[in-house]
Image 1: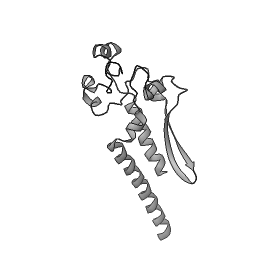
Image 2 (image 1 turned 180 degrees about the vertical axis):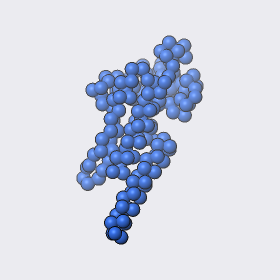
Image 3 (image 1 turned 90 degrees about the horizontal axis):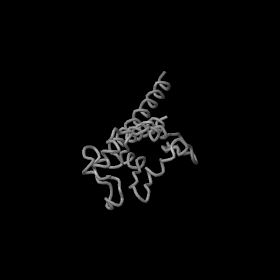
Image 4 (image 1 turned 135 degrees about the horizontal axis):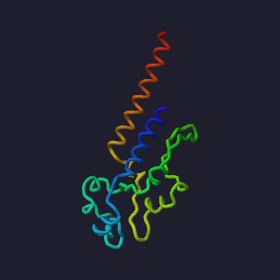
Length: 146
């Protein structure tokens, strides 16, 4: 239960980061293609994108919305341990692999991994786990007392 709550928070934030309103393709061209490996061999040029992209260079602009809709999550049990898997369903949108891993022309943005490293996301997930465990402990205490 607690793992599911934390996983849903994680998946939701990945979906938000995968559907950011960004510049049009024409504007990206005028900016000098900030994701281009040839023009920016050192990495994504966040100075031209500005704003939140300076801190979160892995954000993905929303075009059709297929990428964000392809983000899935599920609870898994392996050797008695629970984990919540957040992944991109490649069957939903064929371009997912190229956005995450990059191509010979474009830098990749591993949005799932980098979202998990955000301190705000980690805090929200921990809070959900503690809240769920607290509720379960209170419920068990009431059963014992009653």
